[in-house]
Image 1: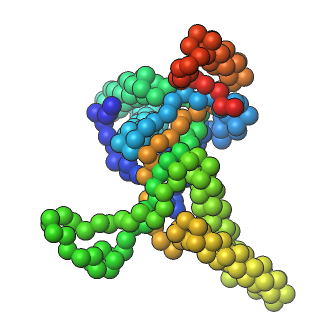
Image 2: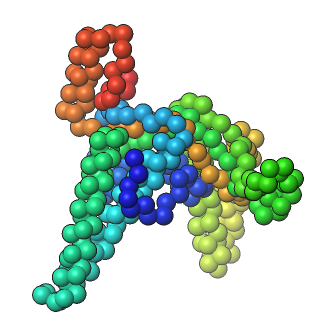
Image 3: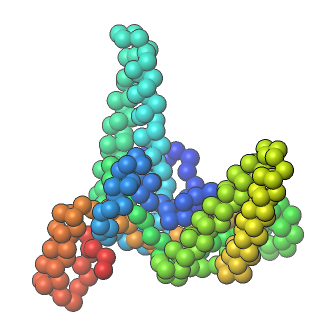
Length: 279
C-alpha cells in the first residue's frame, strides 16, 4: 500500500533525534494532545496488528508520516483560510485547498485503518520486536572502503547490532533515551554554570556539572560496549518486525478479550489474529 502523496519522510528513523519506541507509532506519533496522550497512558494496550518484514515496516513508518504531514497541512490551511477576508477570492481558493486536503487525509486514514487497524484519530504504541541498528559512516570512512568489483557505490552505513526481541529493543531504546536526557540536562546545566557570577554558586554548580558529565560519559561508554552505540555518532534503525497496540478504553479491551476467547473456543489450535489483549 502506497499513498499517492508521499511527502518527504525517511523510511528508517535517525538516531539520536527520534523517539526510539516509535520509529513508527507511539502515543505521540498519532498526533494526540498531551492531555490525550496522558489519558491514553491510563488505558489498556490492545494488540491490533503485527507488521512483518523490513519493506512493510518501512512503508508503515512512511505512511504514518504522510498522515501527520497531511494533518499539519490542514492546520495551516485552516488558519490561513480563517485569516483571509470573508468572500474574497483568496479565501475561496484556500477553502478549496483545505477541502481537498481534508478529503485526502480522510481517504488515506481509511486505507491505514483497513490495512493496519491504524487511525490518526487514536493513540498507539508501536513496539519493535526485531530490528537492526546501523552507524552512519563519515566521508573519510566511506572513502577508505575498497572499491567494489561490481561497481556498486560504497556503503554509507554499517550494521552495529541486531535486536532480536521486544525486550532487547526496549532496553536499547531506554538506554538511548536516557543518554539523550542526560546530554540535554548537561547542556542546560552548562548554560546555567556559564551565566553564574557568584563564586560560591559557581563552585557548587561546577561540581554538579562535573558529576553529571562523569555519569554521562560512563553511561555512553557502557552503551558503546553493549550496543556499539555512541552519542558522538549518528545512527539509523531498520525495523524488521513490529507490533502495533492501540490505547483502548476498558470497554474496548473487554470486547477484544471477549472476541479473543470466542475465537479460541471456536478454533483452539489456530492463532487469534487481530485485537488480542497482551497478557
